[in-house]
Amino acid sequence: MKKLNIAIIGQGRSGKDIHGAYYRSEENRYFTVKYVVDADAFRRRVSEEIYPGCNTFSDYTELFAFDDIDLVVNATYSDMHYAITKDLLLHGKNVLVEKPFARSRYECDELMKIARDKGLTLAVFQQTFLAPFYKFTYDTIRSGKLGDVKQINIRYNGFSRRWDWQTLQKKCAGSTYNTGPHPIGMALGFLDFDPDTRVVYSKLDTALTSGDADDYAKILLTAPHKPVVDIEISSIDAYSNYNIKVLGTKGTLKATPGAYEMTYIQDGENPERPVVETFLKDDAGNPMYCVEKLVKHTDAENFVGSAFDVGTATLYEQLYYKITEGREMTVTAQMAAAIISVIEEVHAANPLPLKY
Image 1 (cartoon, rainbow, N blue to C red):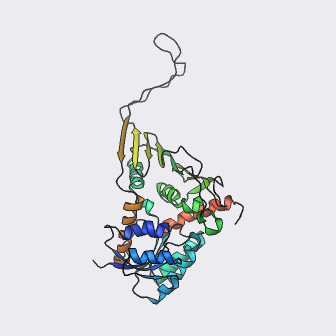
Image 2: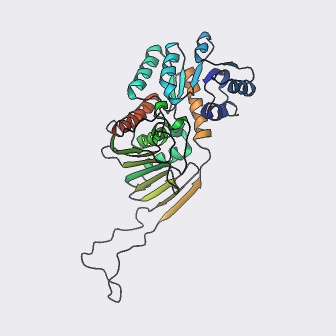
Image 3: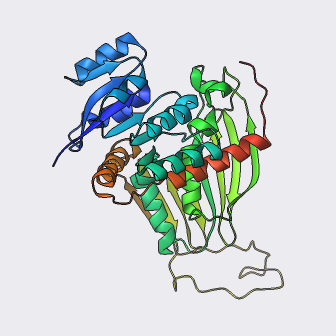
């Protein structure tokens, strides 16, 4: 198997510790890091140590002189994703861009059109779609085990404060642009990316952040004949103990990236009770509360792997075969663009004051 040559732009937390962790792992049988770009001299020196034989540059445009690059990974600041990805595509490079795909749907559509016109691969690093906990939840919903699903709650919450560039609107940052692609993406996935999906409520606000971008977000999505999906991304929730909760007519599923628990009923074990129009009474004739002990079952299990290992490795494996054989990927640029459509709409409905 011939390995493909990668150039990666950006050696921050994502470029070095997420993408880089995969490049340096045994799971990577597909790519060789040949070029690294970062404006910081220290990060370039570190890159030369952890990727022996690679060439490093301070400016991504220096990559245009090389024809042996099979894929460029754009792990720059979020506000740079669109412009750099566009430049790379116009210079004939296949691109994997970090989330968020871009700031607006218009920018996403333009990038996808350039890639189509030039016959290039354009992918977006939304590996949560390939994480075991998302795939298990998706499959469980489709199996009917939980009955008719009425509501799905997705929580990416914590109790903490940030003060880095990810708190600034001018950097295309904040909770919805930074964290939001994961829960919003899952929500759209649970709704089958229905084109009639709509935002029925949204609120953005600032709570603990040191910057001017949102660190509190509440978004409700739904589509015709589909459940309501309640999304929350909050920096002021000290008691959230799940990431996904699914409420169906036959049971409830609670999941984190590490484990799930599911309580459900089975057909035939709880026959329907006839309605009593008068008050209920016990054997002595005293009034009693209407309560029934259902026959219930509970399953619980840990997941093996997460978005950061299994999800990343799977996305890169699919990307290899997309470039070499034209195979379709699970996560498409169109899916990532749909996520940006929701984020853009929510921001338009909830403008926050610019301070920086």
